[in-house]
Length: 225
Image (cartoon, rainbow, N blue to C red; front, top):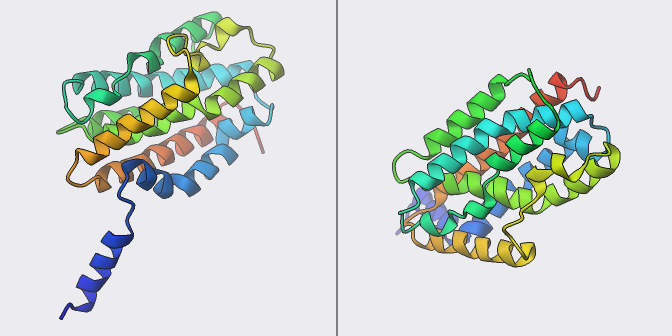
């Protein structure tokens, strides 16, 4: 007869989503809402941003994407990670182009951005599977909510397209279709793992790091109360 601990563990396994994507979505659902409602992201979504705030956001996201893209490329020969390494998603060149268009110089790199980038680099150690939690958080966010932010920034800050390259994906002809393909790649990656719990937790960590950075940027930009 099973003892109480074994019963609880079996119940947890039976209710845990089998799909990596479903598990990450469920684990980060609350964090996703928080990310949209706090920090500099909330200010931008409400049309209360400034050009400097936007440039400051880009400056501090750059090392995060540099770490993510370098680590993904390092693991591109992995049977699990390889199918999710899509250069058309890479944001570093776009961020650098935007910062040049905005003539953004002498912007501070916050400790929270350094910590975020370090966490991404650490996720690339070993098998690198944990990187999928960061790729899920950043890239699917850029392809979804990022498109909304782009329209708001163009209207509220009167930014020209050359300053909004971060939200443009010229190598992707059909974003909805691409998102479906990318989700499928993540699902296949999950199916190729014996256990994807660490990846799911890394997605939650990625959201929390993003929230912490967003809140710090709000303060640094002098926005909000």
